[in-house]
Length: 169
Image (cartoon, rainbow, N blue to C red; front, side, top):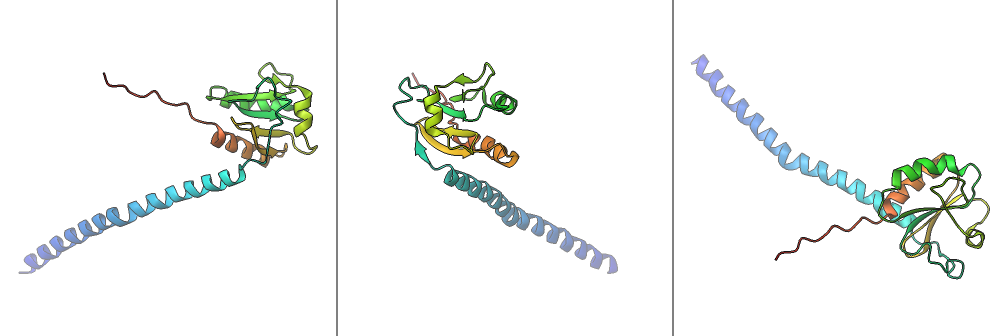
């Protein structure tokens, strides 16, 4: 009789553990996934809010359409810019529309007419992100936190390469 009591208790414990595990899989895992994805969505919404167009690139200086269709990191202040821009260029050089432009000394920096630089420069900022439509999205200084933010913003603004559609014959 004592053995049978322990046997029933053992079966009860196995069922209880099974219900707890099943309940946690049904409730806790989806909630955790939702929370994780919500954090990412909130981050992206905040970044897109900060990346709203500030102004437009002047049309006359860009008569050669250098920036048209390109997501451009424009180097406004070329003092020691090559040491900062080289790792950024290495990270984004294979991106679909990335262009690095300015008055840097490195061969990977596309030289830009000084009239474009003067029309955008305000004195305190060293970099600007220009999207594919020629809209200036944000300005950045040489501060380390600003440079990290600039890399994050570049990753958000750069459009993805379009995948080829599968065509049925």
